[in-house]
Amino acid sequence: MREWISAKTTKVAVFLLALAPLAWLAAHPLGPNPVETITHATGDWTLRFLVLTLAVTPLRKLLGLPELIRYRRMLGLFAFFYGSLHFLTYLWLDKFFDTADILKDVYKRPFITAGFTGFVLLIPLAVTSTAGWILRLGGKRWRMLHRLVYVSALAGVVHYYWLVKSDVRGPLLYCALVVVLLLWRANSSLRSRTSR
Image 1 (cartoon, rainbow, N blue to C red):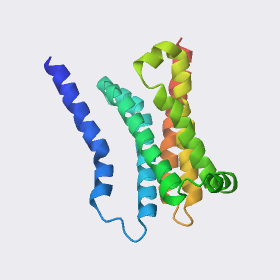
Image 2 (cartoon, rainbow, N blue to C red):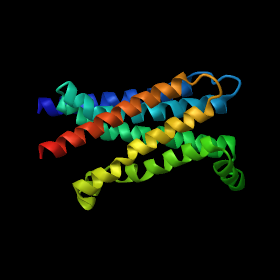
Image 3 (tube, one colour):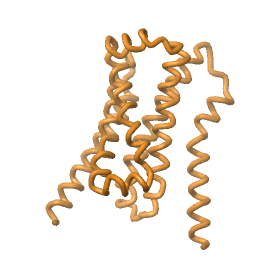
């Protein structure tokens, strides 16, 4: 019972921490260009939560903390949440839901195309994140589908890299983290197959 209460308390703490960036945005001045500030902040936090989600499995194995797995779904859903805010900021505050202008942007501006691709790939992952969907799809098919998170993260990195004009240290850092996590995953899968 005490362990269940502790797990629930920790989950609540992680949930509140994950909302902290949104609270910070709501409570602080957004500067001379609020739309740009919101867009960049929500985009950054989308990538951060994607990296955190991908890091859960390696960390639980390297640190010997199997209980970390209980936070992976929540972190993934927060990546989708901030990605949705990022996309909504673009649709509403930047483009005022002008469909023709949005479609032109997606077609003509590669960084928009990459970002749109990354966000669209997150949608089926968010929808199928429940235990019910794991049962419906079967563990193997569900795991294969959820490997799209790596593609989404890479698309997000490309989106960020193509967006910035000069200082590419941020996107390169995210790229390095995603590639390291992807290589870890590939190595882990290869070792698992070899041992079988």
